[in-house]
Amino acid sequence: MGQKVNPNVARLALTHNWLSRWIAKDDKKYRELLLEDVKTRRLIMDRLRSAGVSKVYIERPAGKIKINVQVARPGMVIGRGGTGVEELRRVLEEKIGQKISLNIEEIKSPDLNAYLIARGVADQIEKRFPVKRALFQATDRVMRAGALGVKVLISGRIGGREIARKEKQVRGSVPTSTLRAAIDFAKVDAKTSTAGVVGVKVWIHKKEEKIGE
Image (cartoon, rainbow, N blue to C red; front, side, top):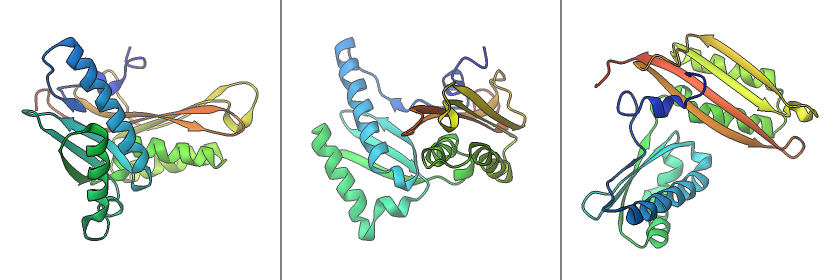
């Protein structure tokens, strides 16, 4: 089952946290807020793609909205004199129709972030970079950053071939069924002009943590 269940979901409240943290008063309000979160997160991910955005956390304490964005290159988001982040806040407030508190957080180790690694591999595939070389470079970069293990899986019509296949590279230990193991997982689609959509999945084993910490 460790290969079928999203490792991030299996570790919620153990080594991972929810991306949306709020409580709705009823089912109707829950649906409205959930849809709003999905649209907000999609807008931020699209606008800040070049800055290396990884996660967008949304909280709603006492009628307020707090958004924390994790990026690899915060300077590209903040801009000169903070103009970039103010422009992003203005766009979000117009979209949501409510004042928000926006915080930009720098990712300390981008090479240990599964989403950024998957996004990088997907970008290389879209540019027709050799798949095996992309796999090697990605796993090598992760292990050099201090990971205990990494697995990268690519599936689809790789290289434009008629029959879909998979390419995988594993280095170190990646215990997907051990809940105390801090496994960061991400899935990104590479949209190619000749082979359709090619899926990229990345598992990174960072360290083991005690349950409840």
